[in-house]
Image (cartoon, rainbow, N blue to C red; front, side, top):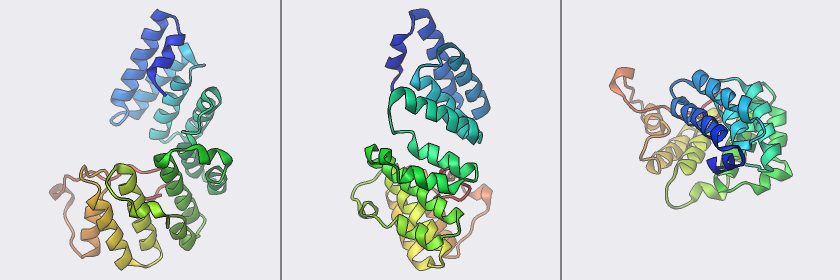
Length: 227
């Protein structure tokens, strides 16, 4: 989805909506409530544009308002006909305490239309939903996919390996978990996850919070990292 879709709006209106969307994106990480306010201001003016409804959904998701996020992302999907919102929608279902619905979305026909990164995100959410249901072994099996051994690097690969390692911890397999946390760290030079710290924890090395500037991962909403 691109801002080019705003070209369907009158020029002056497109400029106002575009400014609200840009402001929402700028403050999303630091102030999701303000981002949500900007996105809603855009939606009041252009509620039939998919990228606008997407912006409201993403801001609401980041702010922890999963009901609003799910409603807005569904609207964006209806308008655009895209499946790209499925992982976040499924995680909203988790956030609302409905893991079975998250699993239903993960196995829906629309899921097959996702690109590689989207499919990985949906797998991570599905694994987290299994853990929500107390199905820890199934959570591990959900992530045992060939993509774990992909070459190269990228946030999606780091997140997949991290989620797999975290699921292994949950079933009492710390040695294997350490291996996969290390493999996650190896493809995560930007430190988007805390995989390196998890390796240290499993090795018995701990640090005070003020001694570490490494950011913690912002993973899907279900509560456990690697969900």
